[in-house]
Length: 254
Ligand code: IPD
Image (cartoon, rainbow, N blue to C red):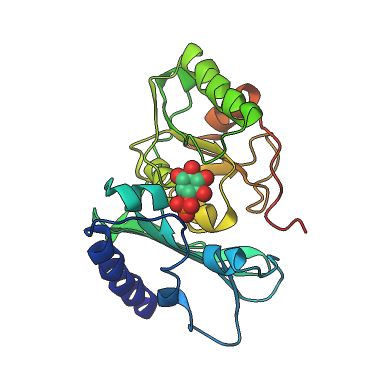
């Protein structure tokens, strides 16, 4: 509700003022304090708590899935796409999601069954069904091993040869995916991101009329670290036929 929206906007100004400062950063670990302490009866999954060694498990309990800074490399370099992502799930189903793109001052939100909104205005995916008319967003990702790099680049190669209109990458999975909800992009796919990067934006895409699925064409699983978000099932399935995944551990794997 409005309290959560207010909280994310306050957190946004903290991130924005830090964003504007020059930084020398070796490790991402120091901006987590601002999201802790919401409700002691709920479970939390957050990038920083997992980095601190907590086991990651999505149970049926009410669960907050939080990334206080999505787009860390952008944040360090002051490349202007950085977001806070907050999702709330019950029985493993996301009930609402908020993505606040701090520099752009864009607040995306969705409630299950209640539609998706950008700064209060309803969002609608493009509905595009023809892959050759699609603008596709993806991410280069953080992996640098040969298999991940060659798979990632060959996926982009094969999409461009379909052809699609173009391929873009903003540097934050949460904001990338919200572009599908706005209709500004027709599809997004990514292998290697984590549940906290996309839990909120997956609901935002679905509530805007888009579809989300695994890159192998199966049902969306926020723990699988593979996602396609698209304007239509036709486009999502076409992308699933083209992209290949490199191995990466599930978020809930021991
Ligand atoms: C990362 C960003 C990036 C994506 C990575 C994510 P972080 O999240 O979303 O765009 O390529 O896979 O892990 O580390 O900045 O929160």
